Image (cartoon, rainbow over all chains, first blue to last red; front, side, top):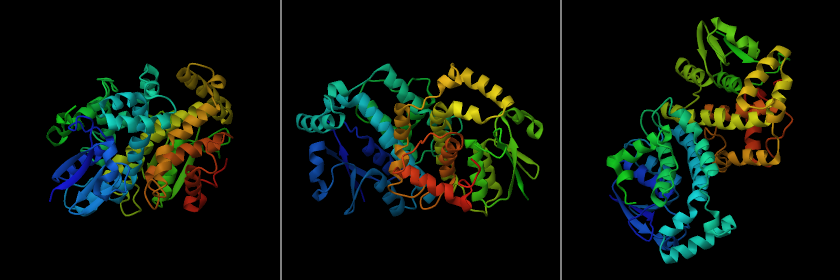
Length: 228
Length: 228
């Protein structure tokens, strides 16, 4: 049965840029599960599947509704144990949760600071109003001022990827020889930036850039072929 | 058979402060393995077990010599598969390597910046000379100047622990309900700071502080009862 994924979209409904939705998209592909994506604007999130959520991804798997990207990954792992594992066991899931928060909080927070106005420019008019109001409340300044693409901030961001850079001197993916959910956590972050901004977050001779390129090619180029 | 662990020591040879050695010490305890520690000053590292290393920990397990804390953890996992697992499988080991580098590089780097002169003050005269020379070459300024315990730096450090803080809202340890090697990675970092400096890295109402307290109590208080 095809799983329905409510997937954040831009004014161009084919542009799907949410880092969290990308984590789920990759997890579904990893499990080899068929998916039907439902383009969903920020201002449409509250009404999907009877309401009750402020964020996507949300999936509906044959009537079972699951919210939150990490909860979805745990659900898929339990529901489809015979498909390729996302975590390689309970310990893998527990430690991957740290990578989830590292990407979802620490890394996404930095990317938001660098690309917040670029994101705004991709949204349709209703979403722009919502987005400006909620994000300006968070940053305390206008989006145009909050966005900081300075060399300093970029250098700090690149330095913060040093643990992955070191890891990649020993193995090809967070998951070892092949990708696991932990890889999709950071992939979502970088794919988000790639889709909304022209800012070059990574230098081309960075092992992290090479890892990201490998991830873009996974599942017949699912990430690379997505509309930008 | 008792495993020999070459363990970095201060002028007071009972003060064992190395973050990497603490990772190994906890891993050995997790595996329930008997250990004989050999206090080793910086300037003694080059000569142990026939030489060939610049860093500790080094272990000798019945004639098998292993260097580097993460390599030691992998070795122990493979050699003693019937003792409690440090990783919970291959995927767990692969993802834990990321936590290793996060602690060993990103976190330890910040602690070094805050405590570098405090460390120096704990060393004996020969080690002080070596330490000052190598670390001042790294920082480009005198240790007294390099050490920065400003509120700004402390705030940045605490913010960088946010992924763990989020994790702890869901589970008790990196490993889930009980600790795994990933926990010992960061434990080593914080134990290092605790042993060499009076700086209070963590606020007492921080979930990370509570997690660290739990780790100090593991294995009959191995961390808490160590001489400071």
